[in-house]
Image 1 (spheres, rainbow, N blue to C red):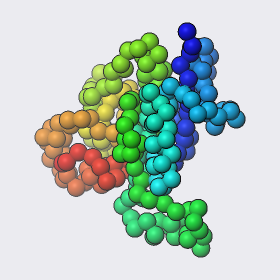
Image 2: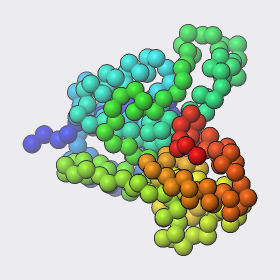
Image 3: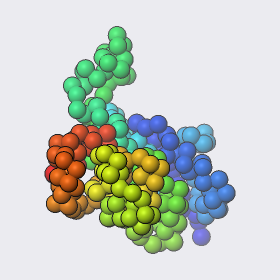
Length: 248
């Protein structure tokens, strides 16, 4: 029986989530034993037009990117969005809060009008094509990455948490970051990271996107308890939640 063919592609990103694949170290050898990686620009020079699973890192920021991702989608039986940029648009969506011409001038200066620097509103991959599975985070979690890949390889649908980071904080016995006067996004952000940031004495920044049905009323109760408004929290949602997010 032939191995599933896997291709890894990158769009607008820092490629940090692909580095997490490399960081699997010994585990990556196990995965390579059961799949055939046919394209991965960061690790190999070979390219292929035939693959079963496409793993996408990065957001869609140019018209030609949209055409490219549509072509990839047409060839892949399964398409996985890897990391925050691919799954929710990531920090690249900050651009959407400003006039695009102003953004180009700020970044590129006198070269802003060069044709190859043309840009558009940033989109997550699923705003352009159908995404079968998302591996959230900035960067992705080792354990979740291998869990999703192993599940797919044995024909099992991976179960991604649809409860907030607060649940994981409670399980770990963390003191709530709100008690430190930090506007934490844990009440509305999807769990699965093991409450990485709060456990490291920092607030949740929302890099895993929002739970499907956030308990908005409970979140508002938290704001009121600490003398804050909905607008205060919205200002914290911009980093990973520009032009998106739950209605608060």
